[in-house]
Image (cartoon, rainbow over all chains, first blue to last red; front, side):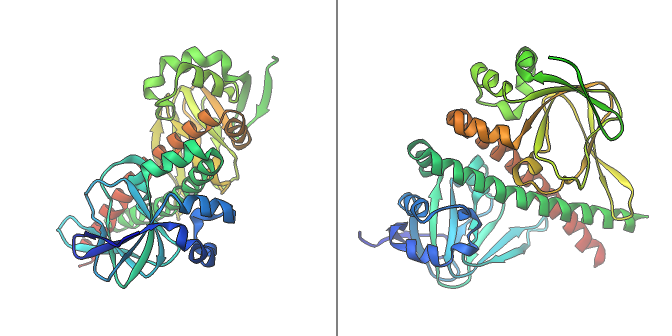
Length: 179
Length: 179
């Protein structure tokens, strides 16, 4: 498979073919991959065939806030910064994420604009799953399809609990301060 | 099927058997049921067989914050109040919800304690789906199982976007006020 260069917003993303060559790497960090809880080695190998492996240097915007997007990323090596523009137009860092984390699930699921941007801070290796590939997994391998849907549900659920808890605290602080 | 009385926390829940008798009612409000987007009449009838229909009077706490729970509710008639206790121990109303809304999905999915309480404000009719029934649907009717998982994903996704947006605004207000 040849090296294909896709020019990104602030750099370049190098496509490395499907993620089958990276199954060993995935297995070496599988404890950190919430998405693959309950996945067997065979499940991971099957899904890796439907994912594309990619490499990017530092400073590459892999996901841009407000743009439409139909894929999620599984970070295999490197660090990403998640940034969102506030109402004054200033970028606010929401989080730093490392290997094993998934990003961009929300837009993969609903096709709505990206909530925040993801920018690489160092040389980064990641695997991409897009909506079409997910739909194919569900129709060709329903057992694995159901597993990944369940894991995505657990993931969003966990995030929803955390964000809802933070919102409650923030609103309460606001109320106490207004008094 | 006889009337079974289950004593709830502040009242009683009357079990009406499986929800098959309520398919016409469900179809009459299906436009308001996000969970059943893309569901055919047959899909709904199939799922209704796995759900239990229940009735409760006003003032019944159907879900209690902090308790474990493995079911979600689909509200068919009536109004519920969603309440959460704040850090001072005072109940805060988070929302009022009407027919067509689903509640309690988070704990059905992850088995973690309930995030908030749901209390009936008037005579209420609802259908219950528990984790075991959902697992059965997935294994016996994978096509419908995948549909419901996808709808749950869309639902949580939508909520996560809304709550994340509210949190961003709240944190920004806090920052501006601290300056």
